[in-house]
Image (cartoon, rainbow, N blue to C red; front, side, top):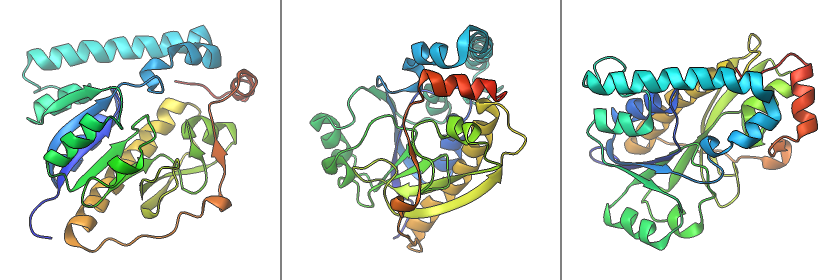
Length: 262
């Protein structure tokens, strides 16, 4: 194709990793809009579960880090995004880069699908968008929807791969960019690479590694689709494991292994 892809981002609120990846993607495409999906499955809305899984001490530590990041966000705003370049929230990276921003609660709402159609969107890219996307929206962008998942698909499909990598005592993690389908982490694979996680005892550190890798792979995938050089291989889901939210007992075992949230 000629020119840059017209891209919409779908994601959830994040203060630490996703904003940088959005900025990297914006540098190689025409980013039309950043859409934050505020769902009950968003990590921001899992506070009760995090307390149940990781306990008050770990949640308090995560809270202190989050409060510090919020302070950095407001300082960044006061300084015209010259300190942290809008990397302290999805909303702020949109504003710092002059990209329209909106919050929605239902990804498959007909009005949102029509909005994507009216934007003449070539591609939607997903960074941890927290809802299953249905057929109509999947087929609205010219080149579909691609997602980055923090594991080496088809293994560790599903929720919280950072938790399950540590729970299973894995030494190697990774990230995968794949086409989205109506099934979770099921579509064809575009880009994939591994990363050493043998030094990770916390989910926060592991997520930092896989998100950084995933951001690089997403840029490669956008360029390949843009240049017409993209290739895809089957995501052989029958060969990998699928994980849901952990149980309280599994979280207790996680902590007993010396693994932690942060």
